Length: 149
Image 1 (cartoon, rainbow, N blue to C red):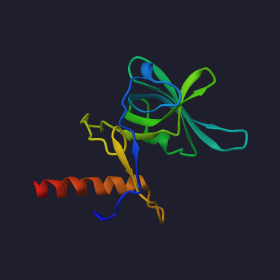
Image 2: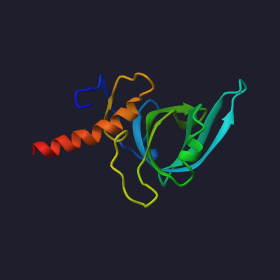
Image 3: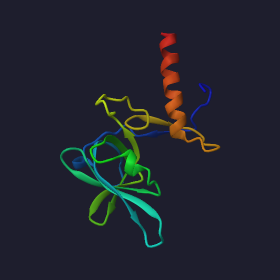
């Protein structure tokens, strides 16, 4: 797996507060989910809409056709959200942001792999996502690095 190289890197290293963001920016926000619920479009497709806060301001978040997120990201979950900031009406919004839980159920901090840094993007084949590959390759790189030092 160490020889499975990324084909590009996404720069998700810009961490900001909600009050500092501008439309068009790609940023990483750290905070918690306030609410998240399933909704349906007129065409019958599922969308997940919610609110996210960094402790000072809130922003609307939307995902498409990912109903598992309701259980994965219940209100109060501490997460990093990374994506492009857009306007939705008069409000700022993150549409289909990448997410990463940053605190587990034991309140322990978790090192980020998918947000808040330069993120490698791997070719995806046979239902193997880039996120899955990152979660497997990153620990191998850290282990190999510790062996070389």
